[in-house]
Amino acid sequence: MADGDPRRQSGILSRRRLCGLGLALLLGACSTVVPRSAPPPVTAGKPVEKPAPQTGLPDDKERHRVALLVPLSGPNAAVGQSIADAAALALADTGSRQLRITNYDTAQGAEAAARKALAEGNGLFLGPLLSDDVRAIVAPAGAAGVPIISFSNDPAAAGDGVWLLGFSPAQSIDRVVRYAKSRGMTRFAGLIPPGLYGRNASNMLIRAAEAAGGTVVAMQSYQRTPASIAAAIGKMSKEKYDAVLIADSGRIAITAAPAIRRSGGAGVRILGTELWNAEPGLNNSPVLAGAWFASVDDSMFAQFTTRYRARYGRTPYRLASLGYDAVLLTVRIAKDWKLGRRFPADALADEGGFAGVDGAFRFAHGHIAERALAVHQLAPKGGTIVSPAPKGF
Image (tube, rainbow, N blue to C red; front, side):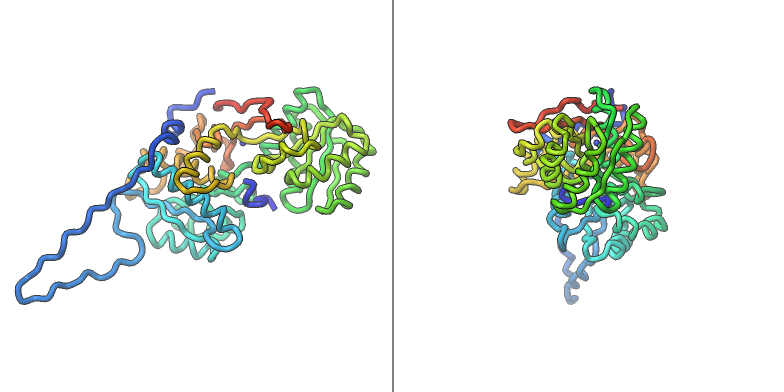
């Protein structure tokens, strides 16, 4: 599936970039003090009337209401809560008083969550996480004129009114293939898993190799069993290739790499996708030493993790950065978002892009976040970056 495992989730920036991220990460948590209401007057001879209990969100005429749509129950609850916590941290770090961010649980039904958010006056949706949930909320959000900035990475979910902030496997594959070609590799092979993710990865591998001036000489699909993986590698070994893309998790790559070496691929460079960036333990696997994959630079994420742990007492999921960056993006655009008006979605098309925990990104050429990606190399003593991410666009 294009979204993959939820735990896995790429010049100078223009003047429209987000407010300084480094400063935001160093700021202490801020809190909004809500003044207490004055007690009702007491009139002689008349009983004091208690106000009716308030339902829904409190009245707020000075802030924009933004809905964060993530799973807060069910199997993906921990990931969703990590994203929600990161969003709250971003709001505190920036000190913004222009936004009220309210969490809605998509695990109880994404469409129901979206309709509740609309009824409560939210003018922007951050999330959902899964592409099926995005499709479930497109109709009510579109009818209300509310844009969606989703955390999905399924390109099929993007479109009118829907922008994707998730990490794109297509961009990751393109970046690592181009880098491999720049290092003299021209003949590529692919080990492709079943499902939508695998189909998208195979198509991107072919396009990226051709665009870089290389060729895909072998491609095999497999089921996720050792026997199936070995059989696919055996068929692939009939061709000579310089590099092989394993379009799957690091766990699968660890299984496949020894078979590739035994099948005549001793000097073959192993390539991975953005999925590997959520698996820091891969550096401990000697069979993947020297492998390359393209993903965002993690230097800012390390600072974010320190801030997150200090506030919540636990380590964030890798996808939590999407919640943080989505709020930074919203805070930046909120400066031009007038109260009572629709969210100015045209501002998302800034060609100079924006900055966040995961580096520079922009939506200038479509509704999928284009990211500045680095090429990482795995090594037993710790991974290194062999090709830095551009600072901007």
